[in-house]
Length: 390
View 1: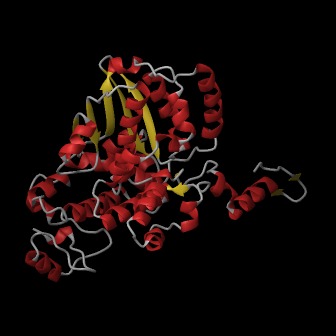
View 2: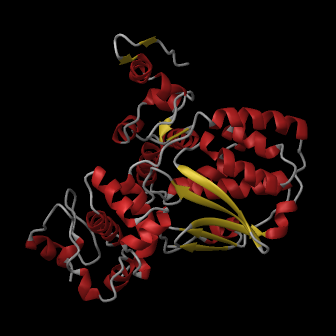
View 3: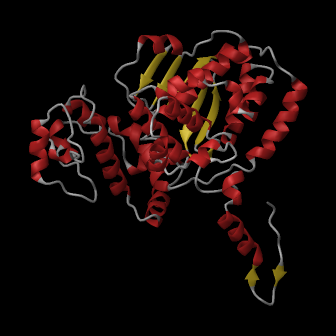
């Protein structure tokens, strides 16, 4: 809905601002797409695919949706965009309820690529795979504002890099794996060739990959990396697309340019940006403020001011992230304490003891409970704090 400007100098009131506030309060902007909003949203195709799978399995979908701050109306109406953080949470809950640790992969294998909408058709009508990947990089925010896709090219390879914007990377496995498998399917379908990447790198950890999925990816998959990346051999950029249509592509590019102007978001919460930058640095012992500021493209002073404006300090963010990661790692039965300490950036296991939640101290009896449950089986309603384990 357009903004109406009415100037009344005698009143000294900016009517444009008041008009914008009324539009936001009625939800017009949220329903039709964010206009430079601060909360990244997505088209919700993944959420709706997971919802359909949950309904088919007979799960209590209303309970799962409520826990994800979503409603049945939002999911069943494709005109509603969904907050990316809520989509990630819903995927995690559905995966846990179905005991499907590769839910994102399985959804991507079965989804109709045409369900991606305008983005798919602008890729499918491109002249070559390289052109299609460049368009995916530019227009991906139409489908998901929380992930910035970059296209890089060198004399040896071309690659697609996924970077999270305004959304925490820590809690996501299924959404990013959905994107990777969907990318593989698009490249193979458009070129009508079973091309495989050189390598796939993902930030989150996995200790195993089933043989069938290894065959699906067709290359080495590196988990626990410092980047989310899919790399192909450089010559593949020239692979022709059978359904290329330059006239249709030119028309769709115009529509995409118009659509992308409605889906620009700010940098989001700086705490999330800092956490996303810290996570891959921890195992290498490089999670320092100078390095994080460099990766974010700002000075240390600017980073400190932006965190302070949200009520945080760099040390607090670092401690909180270590606590959350430690809690997750300790639930993985095959991870020894020494490896957990290394993943958190400690050179020795003994240094792992002081890790504490920045706002909470643990009673000594929790350490005893953990000792009685060395495999990490946490009783319902309780959690073990990593700082209690030495």
